[in-house]
Image (cartoon, rainbow, N blue to C red; front, side):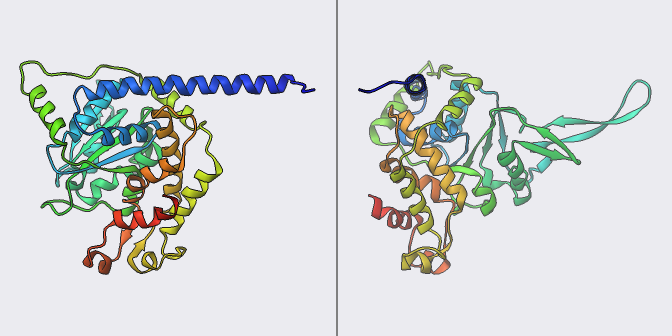
Length: 339
């Protein structure tokens, strides 16, 4: 005879309530995707990976040639999630104070002088850093503390940033003139590096017809900033099986030259992904499962998200690049045992 205790009943009810919250979030994310789809055409993978990054509480680096709706996507996300939004157009003469803000000396009516801090555009919930690799390394570094700690330090004082806080940066391919490669430390702050490619024929046809008429479609608000933060907490409660954990650890650790069992990694990889890559991949598979209406992530999620999570956290040697080896090929090699 099986005896059901009060603790077992409470645990079962809690599990059912959590599953209901997962399903409700999946429905809301379906609404988010439909709303974004009104203005963004043929970039479903890009949209999904960006949503995964936001649900995981991370920042996004969108890489692609001009004209692929990267900036439009950032603006649309601000509307859909009800976030305050500001944009910074990165140029070689942009200074750190132009992003963070600065102190100015003011004199009041009594003739007393004092400093007052004027907030920069970084004091927002969604910061759009357009063409970030056109800014100088000094200005790029101004974002490091903000992206990791969600606060900035100016003149010895610390200022907290709004919550939630996300940076969506766009980047031109490095072979274009007038660009500065982002340092590895800043690249690691981005949750994903998402490659934005050209749309397919049907999507470009739909975009051509929709965007050249008298009326322009617009996205609808679906969630608020508070709801997004609640969703981010919910993502962290998604259970992850031991098989998925082992796949994440195995894939990431095999990408480190000093630890890898692959001769090509030891010979062709200069530096591999650190522990933050494992953390990001763990959060990413949870978010992807929820977006797709599943309660538990699988190894397939790990394989699908490994490229955007790892490609900016690894570096190939000069000899490997000269031989035509790409990071995508290397990541495929790392993932081969789990495919």
